[in-house]
Length: 124
Length: 115
Image (cartoon, rainbow over the protein chains, first blue to last red):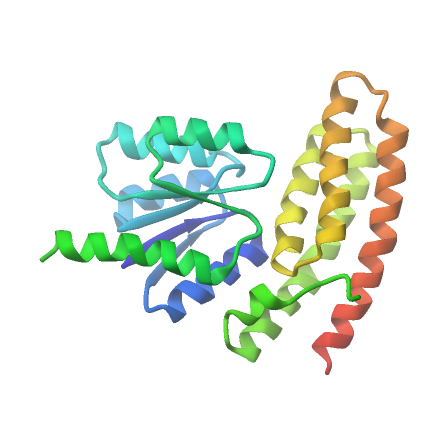
């Protein structure tokens, strides 16, 4: 799967990138929301993983853009522990899943795999 | 007990990659700490909150939960300082505790890096 990861924190971004590549995915990274919005339109990833709080455009703006443009790729939101209200807002906007930081990389892999299976069955 | 836990990074199952992340942290995190000190010194509470939030994400990857808790306190104090100003002294106290704990973490991670 082609996965776009939008996260402004470089250590977390690199860690996610290394794990997803190890799992066999193609990974596109963005260090801010604006860059992510541009890459989503240009590269049409199969899955988006986006942090809520990023410079220039938030994870919520990414979810809103994906839904507004009727793009079909699912969006997983990365949230901090105290952001429950924002997670609810993300779901109202159409986010498909969320994971709270700090998280286990194994858990992230399992959640991504669930979307990969759906993606594969859609492309049969 | 160590002030960090590399169990998340060990899930990469690749020692070279763990070292790569530690190196990235040892280069990036001190710059973020410098930004945090500057933001607090300039009483820029919006930036103080943003930098503390971002740094908390890095420390989470390294399982440095005590430092994360200090940053979470700082986020709340920065939010309060923005509106009332009354948390300013408390925030500076938390910041001092954080700097001491961060310096210890940095020393230990450098040792871990060179094992």
